[in-house]
Length: 133
Image 1 (cartoon, one colour):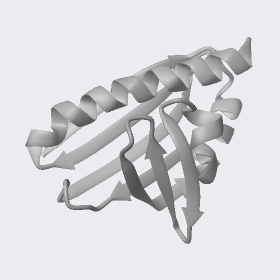
Image 2 (cartoon, rainbow, N blue to C red; image 1 turned 135 degrees about the horizontal axis):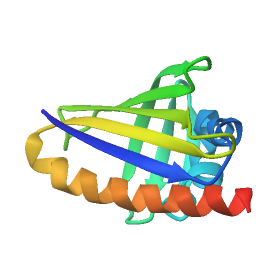
Image 3 (cartoon, rainbow, N blue to C red; image 1 turned 90 degrees about the horizontal axis):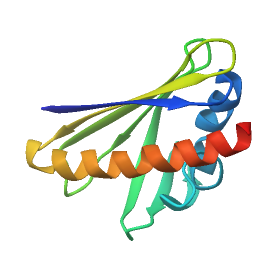
Image 4 (cartoon, rainbow, N blue to C red; image 1 turned 90 degrees about the vertical axis):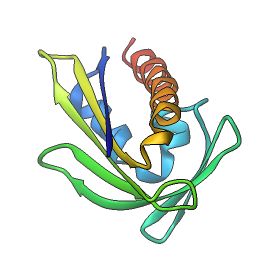
């Protein structure tokens, strides 16, 4: 199984970053606008539309307020396993790190997922660093 890790530095307070992460249905406006262009809630899931046209149903697995950690999963015809966690960690007084980990099968899709995560990380930095400015 491929495990892809992104450690994203942010010039934003951890509380502000967590507020955006935990707003599960607003990923397209608060966390990664431009990378995700639409999101709508469907029970315990969100249906996200990405800028490249792909659509995914992401099921909320856990939202841990005390650890500032959100976990979601995807199941579709392209992946037999996809589990992701996003955790906000303080980095000094007013900065944060967003730790984003995706475990995915089959391994053949890992390069694509890795590239998409890079684009997502850039969108998160742009959105949250701008708000902190």
